[in-house]
Amino acid sequence: MTRKGSPDVGFALFDGRSILSTLTEIDTEREVVLEDNTVLGDANEAWLPVGLKRGTLSQRGFFDDAANSVHDHLVAFAQRTAAIALEGNTIGKKFIGWAGAITTKYRRIASKGTLHKAEADYQVTGPVDEGVILHAHTQETTAGNTEGASSVDNLGSSANGGAGYAEVSQLTLGGYTNVALKVRHSADDVTYADLIAFTAITTALTGQRLAVAGTVNRHLASSWAYGGAGSGQSVTFMVGFARG
Amino acid sequence: MSDMTKKRAKSEMAPRRYRVLTAISYPTDPEIVKRILAGERIPFEERGLWEAPAGAVVDDVPAVSVPWLLAQGLIEEVA
Image (cartoon, rainbow over all chains, first blue to last red; front, side, top):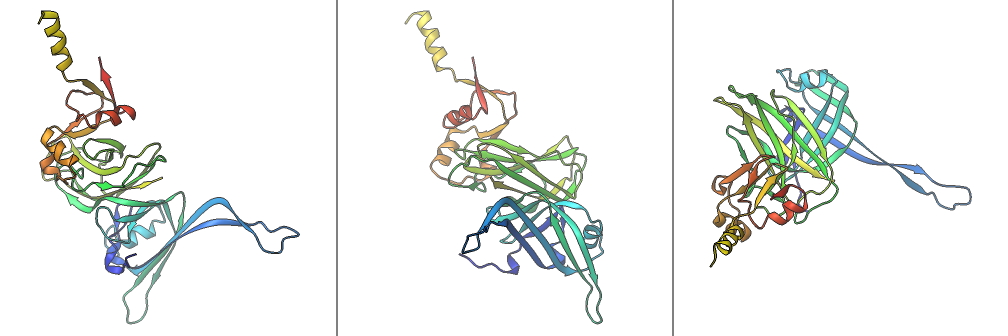
């Protein structure tokens, strides 16, 4: 086990909105729902899982009203996909993905002699995924992929599908029509096949979660390509995948 | 060797062709494939990847990949 600290937090993205630079605390929780199964005659309490899991998410940090920063994000009270990396913004590191994080409480705190604070609670709807980063939250100016030197080796395939996450925080198309992001997989690290093709992205501040069923091969990678023609293009994004 | 035998020999030597059912990418240089199979981590820039979209017919898929691509229904052999 390796301990991690606040410098390791790599990104906090909500439908592409990058709010890491405003945060001082993230609190994420997963819970298995149990029901009291104790009946007459029992000498000890008994509990059984009902088959449900639920998650909670909350944040604390500084108030910032810059465009698309934390205030714009929270005051919308919207449901967004979210991806947070507690272990670093590096390929192969883990991230937590939320299919739907709904802002339910937004507190703005002003106190004498301090910077304003912003705090929020989210209600989590849908799955919470434990994934691995396939493309760090960084900028790319040309098409490419992580097959080969930067692919992620799971040391074996898995049979239960999974979910891919794509979070785009900046996009300059420069005449191109879109950028296509994919998750790819391979049994041998030689040939890669599409596993997930995210909906073509035409604007920034976008988040997607797509689920896939069936076999997921041992090696995972991501790819990105611009559609059409243009110049001066760039995209800043993360792609990750959580095996089922 | 008769003409018929020569034709059969040539046919047997011809690379097998596959229709791509799900987009794939692979290095076309056999030396690169050898290095990957030997465990070398080769950067994207050196791999010389070929991107084959769904529907394409190809004859240079690395032999090592053909069995699992067929088994998973990602390519099919073209007669």
